[in-house]
Image 1 (cartoon, one colour):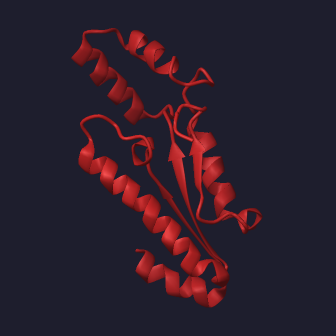
Image 2 (cartoon, one colour):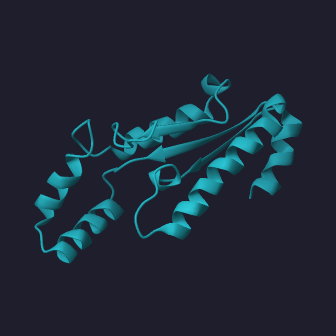
Length: 140
């Protein structure tokens, strides 16, 4: 997709490329070796591309969400509850203990971050990884 849209962005001297990945890119998740590797590669690709297109007014950034309250997260928590013979509520409590903000993120918070990065107000932000995780990711 980038190969198709990037030439027009560069010609117009304005564009935004925003990707999303999980914390596995910087803090590997157990039993997800291939996923962790691909996610780290996305960070490297984004950083490399950002330097190549910055002078053309194109920014390239990554959003790294933590646990955002979506249907998918509920499915994952329910699956964990079943797998570990816990109640859904206990799984949520355990998860919240790992999030300094003490709650799951709201999808709107993720969307607001993406909207900001896509705006003119973010024209000097490029090659960055923006965490929307309530402080959950332990890596610096």
